[in-house]
Length: 228
Image (cartoon, rainbow, N blue to C red; front, top):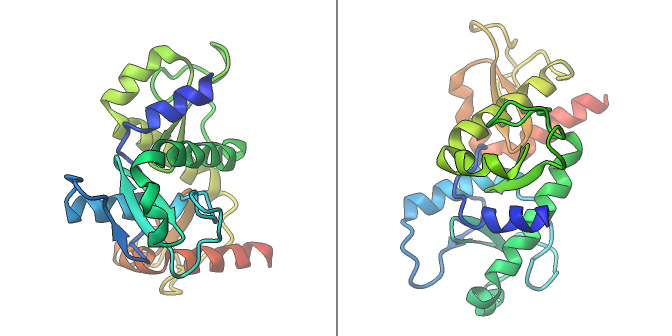
């Protein structure tokens, strides 16, 4: 029941927090009132933590020909334009699949032990409520926190994002900037940013643009350093 609540709520939540830029063409359905700038921002914030590698419509792998479509403020990745034919009929089911995948991917390592709204320990009031914002998981202690969450999604997401950063700093494998190779403390202290839920530490704010353009490659470089 709680997962159903999360899926329903996610349809009306438009906020996501991450860094990215579109790597493939994106399209909005006919009749949509979304602007090009809004469309680009949704892709920028939601694509880094998009949880599926297969098209929600056909089940085929998402490759270089995949297209990014925005429905109701949510990113949906399709293997080709052919899958858009059933868009309006199936978009709720597609988004429900994405929500379930977000929860499954992020719940095991979710970094907050408390509700970002009430501050109560998760589990103190029963099973937490899992809500998907864009492509990020937010866990609430109870249904009573839903109105306050919906009123200020950005504030809740800021707490979750800070927790993602704090959880990864101690085990971060590099002492140099993944963009410039300069020491992290060479310009006054490391600048921490998230690509989806992955921490990237930079030597300065000027390197943020590279994260937007090269996010997946930089994350891969960090993971390779972690393994070594």
